Length: 513
Image (cartoon, rainbow, N blue to C red):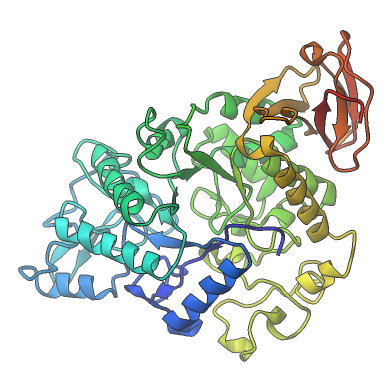
């Protein structure tokens, strides 16, 4: 819809839906409300016909407590599924492991009255963790991956991969055994399903996440991509503080990655805007600025969509999107953000940001023809963000809509190789509110090098900045959106003035065209 080439399908496996489908009860079945396997194959074929590749969400760490494996494990400890989960006689092991869902869980252990033992869970107590020390579990998971690959999908978003194993005396995250298993998965993929994408969801610091790419010299032998979580909150922080420092700092601390790998960067997703990797002072600041109402918070984060977080300010939304599309990594846009969808903080947990996509102003926002009462989550009913006003149909009919603007920006990004594959070099800006950086891709035979200068203003006021561009003396900055040629670069500092929350993308051309 907005120029996407690689849609990531949210969980659709059979599930009791106590956690939006992340509580899987069958790894090889479609939730009946969505259809069946034939419907899914039709969807994949239709996406391929449109030049899109399909990634699906695969919950590797845990299942629902309604999964037949768990039901067998709790009722028959000595049976074939008795060791499919992590069981213990008490809740004293792995005490160094943090509790992730602090709003709802008091422990990572829950007592099961049937088996009369405790089972381990890093998330909700209805989501028992699988026991990857059991080779049979590994085989089950790899078999499930094969199942979906044989149906034609192009990759997996591997949910919650840092937590697969437990070792006493550690925090039970990012353990060597986890990486060994991922190497095995990657080898299976490369051998039998080449060109498949593995995207790691590891909510960790970049220096830990880089290990999920695998062996550096070989170009990576684990996941092809991994989310860069700490960038997201720091963009929000930088705009409120009107300072580039939060973004500059985290990018300077981001290690190099293997040549065959890429970061996945995003502004919002289906979870809360995580504030785990900020200081206590920064977390309090973010709550004060973006979530004054406690209902806007969940666990250690903020459960709001992009437009409401930014007070539906079009200039800020465009600035955030421009940063998403120009910073190093592959941009991942959350559905609805391209039309400015809102949220519903009256819904529980993270469902506030998981409401139906708003396609039209008609019944159920065009999302479903069923009775509105049968929708899993209600549509947004709001004078600003309600589906009667904010929807794809209305956006398509308005040439100045956020959707059309986003599509144009994505197309510009696709036309400039430097954004996708180029190096990233931050330039020294004379103004602390302005971040400037170069994206550069090597020249190909017969073509000029692809060199793009990006300048973004985090301040709400117009700001000047001077940049040292002497290394590009004689080149002409050509603005990428309008094609306007700016004065040639000389020996003196290059002066630019940016509107409040404004930005420029320039192609630095050797000629005067």
